[in-house]
Image 1 (tube, one colour):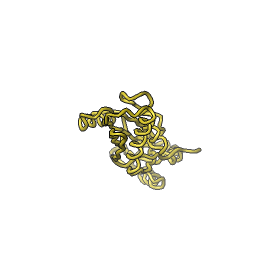
Image 2 (cartoon, one colour):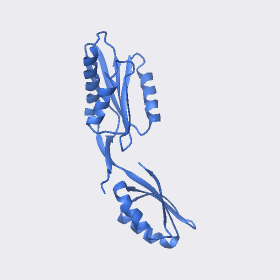
Image 3 (tube, one colour):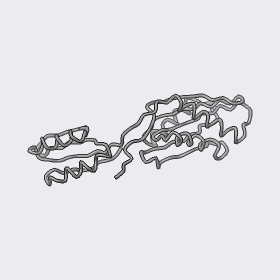
Length: 204
């Protein structure tokens, strides 16, 4: 079975600038994980650039890249958000917000000029980004008796799982993460023991 086990995103905020006939286009790329973060960033940018004319943006969220949006913010339809989104798609990035802040310079650029300007500003921002690969992690809770401790720990170590939390009481509980591609094998291994319960929590 084939797994899409990783995705590409950016490590930290980056910025680039493109100018055309007096207009200034500031491209800004941000690592994000949800839409609330995006709303907060856009709100903050509008406070930082109170005299800017447009805040056009695009984003992609999730390892499956199915949550995405492009916004022209008052520019002609398809002239801003779409070319910005195109740069995220061309670099196969997700969990990224890409904003282009425009200061109007007094000269109309026309739709072709706008498409080029927003595209170039997005390129400038991503060119200086630190692009990183992240592995998709499945998060589990394992419940077991103390007698099974050595078995569970050995199994987690063999599968290179990362323990994130543990509680040792009458019923032991361990929270751990494991790469998506290894999760099915681990589930089968745990299923061999009826007294070890494994519960999937999330995938990130």
